[in-house]
Image (cartoon, rainbow, N blue to C red; front, side, top):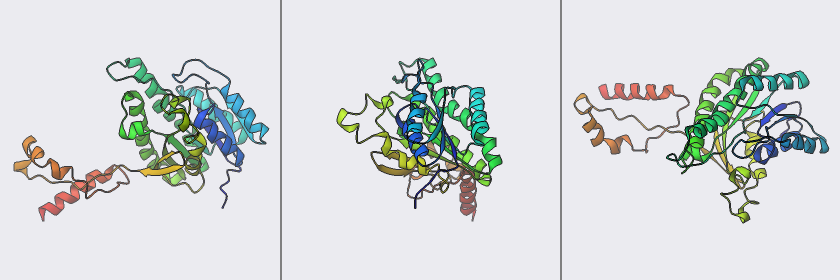
Length: 301
């Protein structure tokens, strides 16, 4: 069964090239009206260009409908203006793909605090700004699909990317709260951790891997996660046509009796505390407290 986005309005940030462009083109191909948002800056966020307009022209030449937008995700009022323009033009906004990002990689010892702050501002605060700007509208519509862009650097760490990793893991955490708050309004929120050969990763992939890791090979996951039948609260990895899910787990609590509830007692029980054989995937943060209370009750019997 074909997945269609006919009648849907989508905003894709950072859509002037790479992954964002690939998402925008496929959304439009499948019937969505697309706002192509991009400042057109370089990989480190400097400068501007008309990259978004080029993508809009590609969409229009293929028979689709799109508009370019040059607002910055780092400014909330600009995201509000973007959403207002889309609603005025097309009647609503049904899909938001938070894809805009920059890189300023250095080891933490060499990283200027300003570079840490800017990367977090673009990725994390920028995604929060765009999401907040569209949130109430999606609630009113009782329909919304939002995709956050995380990274393996955030989920698992990566040398030289403290700023980027911090922002990307935070986005997975943002998803985990928003999926709860949006559930009764049919607003579904997911996280994608893509691996793709773009200008952001130009110095990472060898030349012969570029075709294999083309952005188009991430598109199936991204578009499913913003489709009508999308799940919510998923963390999906995608690259080179390979797909997987990641989960945040918690093991069963180990109750230390009062005599052992000391630093030394914790150290002596570390292997038990760190045993993953009882792992579960919590549906919300309250399950930590519930698990502790349940374990205490069981230990008291």
